Image (cartoon, rainbow, N blue to C red; front, side, top):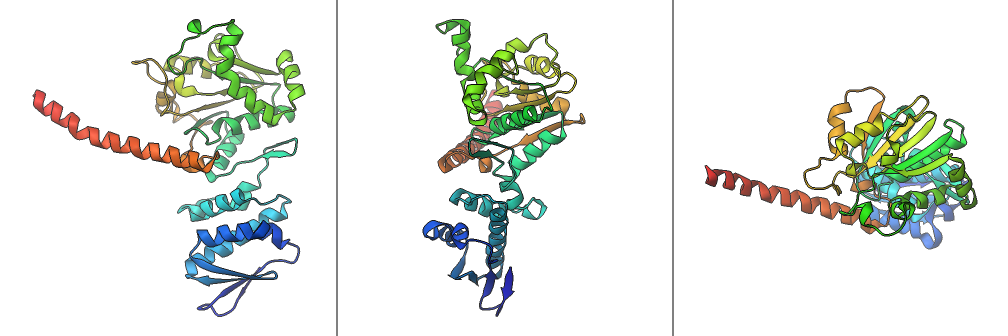
Length: 343
């Protein structure tokens, strides 16, 4: 795809004739504009020839990006501005030499429904999805918007459709924002529903809405509070525990020991968003130190770089992480001073 002219002056990329240049460059050259803003290089297009001027390292990255975008187009998948932005971010990563190609990540289909395809959008998300394929118990730990629950549910639906499991069980602890079920109005079902609503919403993205009530009625899909898991042994099931930071260590142990034959467990949560009463330790915070040496258990961490919601969500998460880090740093001298004063 590449033709080298004068290395000091320019580098020319020849796009195969089979590739639609509008698909590659975007409507009104929107993708081209993103590329020019993302790299310190001048990009000139004439027909299917793209000439690059700039620092060799930047020119090499642009060439690599174009190769990846062409590879994605060849899969039959369309390219959006988000696709270009995520491919750029992956190529900018310092660990890229150890990573999968952006085209491999961004064209990996997990589930398709009603014209919508669910796929990983970052390297860490692909590693997480791969871990679900390879391990029996998988932990996905990271901030809101990183896709940890959504991707796990997509893998659960995929496993159900492939008849790898007979049912899906989705569960959450019903403790958030200091509320207790006994103080909420309505029947038990009405009290529980707000806690489980995000799981129902995700299901509607992945399955035809008219089939969901039938699957729920048949028990093929079960959505229930964590307390309903006690005393059960769950065979041939894909089991997801969401908001696991709000489990106590005892609840976490209870849940993990529900694992039956032919089943898989995915545990998701954000250790920075614990809503447990004061003095109660989070089961998600302590479990890694207990299970980290057990084979077939995988711990996967996602960060603000893996947020796949609106761009601002990632920036907000990163800003709060920086704020928390500064606050912790500032509080350390104060603790030392207090200890010194008391002594």
